[in-house]
Image (cartoon, rainbow, N blue to C red):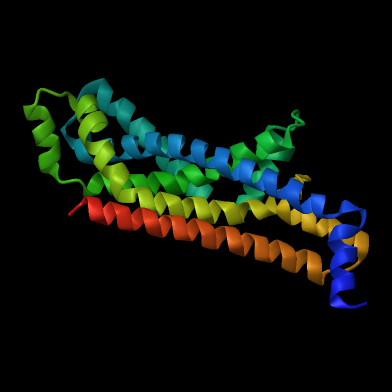
Length: 236
């Protein structure tokens, strides 16, 4: 068969291209909602850890103990999540923790979101720790308490500083979702593999999937570049 005939056989015949498009939609869904979960949980963890590092030694009594326990739990969470493969976490989530659910997209979102949160937490913590201590003192001089200072002064600055890194985390997560097929989720990679199993042709389906991932990564990398330039311009 010629290349054109192979292309038609793999993608056009029997509407096999739908495996790719349907899988792409699932991949983008999982990535988007996992990023939202990861950012929300990651920010909470980062605030707990940075608060303990900045103020833990000055605190006294029960509040210090509570913060110490929360910081310890966060450190254990980060160690476990960052120290184990994401595919293993996905399988544990599907076959052990959420074994009763049939919503595979929900399982994938939770698994990848919890994984992403560990990395987002460290990214955001570094952003908070990079803010000069004088910013905290400025907030106090304005009459803000610690929570208000974090909310109105520190977090907006930290978020701006780490926004490019968060965008890159989105790109990394997009590629990591390719292991969703281990729990039977029909994502982009699984769609290509289904075509391969139907046509017994590996080249076109797998190369096609790789090209789609490459195009998406290049597109989001371009957007991150624009974002970084705008942030640099806004600082002038």
